Amino acid sequence: MKFLHTADWHLGKPLKGRSRLSEQEQVLAEILDLARRESVDCLLVSGDLFDSYIPPPEAERLVFNFLAELVGRGIAAVIIGGNHDHPKRLAALRQLLDPLRVYIRPEPARPQDGGVLELGRDGEIARIAVLPFVPERKVVDFSKLLGPEEGWHEQYGDRVSRMCELLTAGFSSSTINLLVAHLYLHGAATSGSERAIHVAQPYAVSAARLPPTAHYVALGHLHRPQEIAAPSRTVYAGSPLQLDFGEQGQQKRVVLVEARPGRPARIESLPLASGRRLRSIQGALAEIEARAADFGDDFLQVTVLTEGPAPGVSDRIRELLPNALDVRIEYPKGESPDQSAALRNLPPEEIFRQYYESHNSAPPPQALTALFRQLYEEELRAAD
Image 1 (cartoon, rainbow, N blue to C red):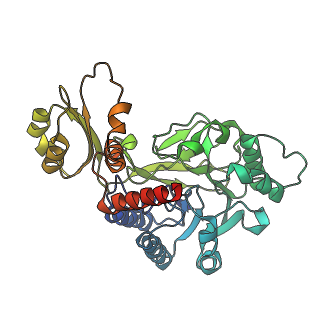
Image 2 (spheres, rainbow, N blue to C red):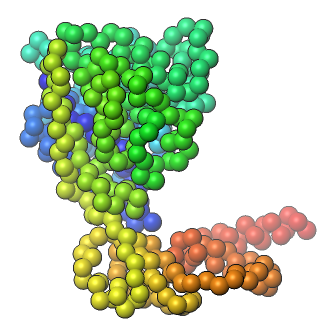
Image 3 (spheres, rainbow, N blue to C red):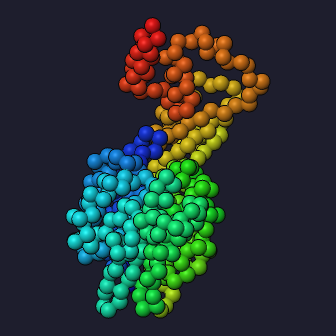
């Protein structure tokens, strides 16, 4: 049987305020075309369909249109929840989509309650164990759900490892055995674009604890494509687009897995071509102006090197490079004077404007400034 592994779509995620829905639509069309061209039996999506708990309707439209095309081509799908997905929103779709062989599993479940799925073709059976993201605050609850309370006293990584062991206990030499999970393996390489709190040590799981009986372990959560040394072939598919400037230079891909019972799986990376590249550049203003034609359609993070404060340079860069999403000015700094006295002499709205611009390289939108003014005035009235 053939499987196509992808993860971390983060649909609806903008970049520095710039919508990327058109790129996201293009890359989903490319993934769909690869699934059709390779005649895959099942698509594996290892979590983070969406970028936020409440995704914009346009992002949900992309998913539903994609799934409709997938069903129309007779391709099954196994989709698990990630740390960015709202479990209840995904769970609402389960009864509707299960009969169409689109299996959405937003939260951990016992094997008999949907934690293990079986797909068949030409006499072969694929047994697919699924482990969606487990929040630290709920790891004990899910541990009790999957097994007896006694013994569930270990740290997070140990508990999640035991969940994997329970879910994969039914793997056998006569079946194709897959584990689909959204987790952070200790020692795996991050990109800086993941949610920092969820790729820290408390969430780390030991790769050595993964099941040795799996043909393939399909992971999501980390955006950098990579294979991890583990008892079974273990792969992060990575995000299909460069999501932030920490991912620049990464070749995005999906993973084609061909497996048969009793034999090692054949694994192939299929590169993706959709989406704009992200690039960081730096230099003096004159150097950047001379190279402006070289940057094409890339989204840019620009650092302008100057000898001192340079009013108007950020505006000049954005005028010259419309795809410059982040503009920074760097110059040698002497001893930093105490700015507190200067700030005390500024109106609160001006302090807010300077703070916002220093973090976003652009002035705050008028609506945000108006909201700040309203909140500040309400606070003043309350103080009176």
